[in-house]
Image (cartoon, rainbow, N blue to C red; front, side):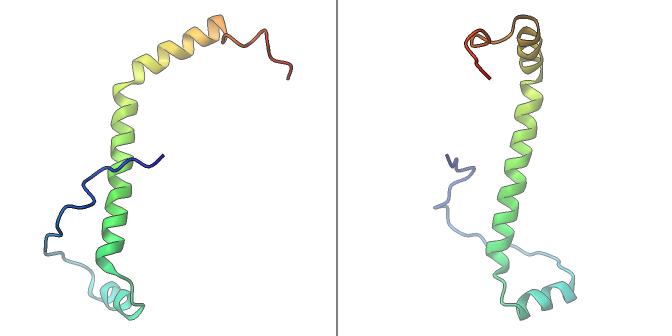
Amino acid sequence: MQVNLYDLNAPKKATNLSINSDLLRQVKNCRINLSKVLEQRLAEMLLEEKRCKWKETNHDAIEKYNRRIEACGVFSDGLRTF
């Protein structure tokens, strides 16, 4: 299941970046689409940040659930054959 973190149809916006000149030259020589790569990496970083915030927000509930499972087990414990 893919969740869109941002509006994929939003218009592009020009921006200024400062990039190491040798890195930029090599990227251009390899015909790497800088805008596409930057967008992909920023989306990955945004997803990771949202995951970390979700874990932080839900830490107490996850810990409580884990303690309950340790103490009581899960509903299917008596049904498993493996």
